[in-house]
Length: 259
Image (cartoon, rainbow, N blue to C red; front, side, top):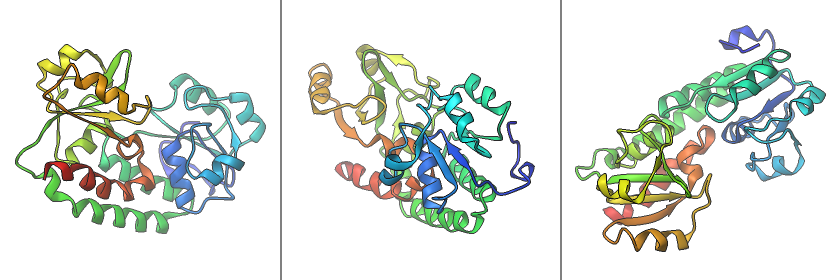
C-alpha cells in the first residue's frame, strides 16, 4: 500500500529498496547499509553501494519482477522521478513511501520522515540541523540586490528548462538568481528565441540529465553573445537529501564570479 504516515508501518524495515538516487544517498548517510537491499542503475552514490547492491532497473523503468524476488518490506519512491503506474503496481504487494520534494522545506520534511520510518530519527535530526545552519550561512546570496535573470537548461534537442514549480528553481533562489522562466511550470521546451525574449543574463547548463559539455557553451554563445553561460553540477541543483550539506558551499563558489 501507499503509506500516508510513518506510523502506518508497524515495524522498522529490514529490507529497503530505493528507486530514487538522491534518497539512496540519504539512506547511506543515515547508516542503513544492512537494511538497503536494492537500488536503481542511476543510484551511483555511494560508489560502493552502486557496485554491490541489487539493481532493480531505472527510475522510470523499474523491474517489478526483480523487486518481487527481493521481497522488500519498504520501497522508497518519489512523485516526480518515478512513474505513477509502476509505483501503484508495486503498492499492491508492498509498502511504498512516496516523497514529494519541490523545495528546501519539503526536502527537509522528507529527511525527517525517512528518519522516522527507518529508526534513524536522531541521525536525521542532526543532519537537518547542519543543513539549516549551512543554508543560513549563505543568506547574503539570496538577498543580493542584483538578481540575474537565469535559465537552467536540463536538456538539448529540444532545449528544456526548469520552470518555476521545481526544486531546481528553488535552489536558484538560494543562489540569489531569478528564474527567467518563472512564467512556465515543470520542464517546458524552449527555443533560442525564447532565451532572447526572456532577456536571460545567465544560462546554466546542467551535467544531468543531459550531460552538457564545454562545446555546448560555444554552440550557444555564438547565438547569445551577450549572455554569460556556464556549466553546473546537476546533482547540486536536483539531488535532495544528504547532498544538501554540500549545496550552500557550491552555490557560494558558483556565484563568486558575480561578487
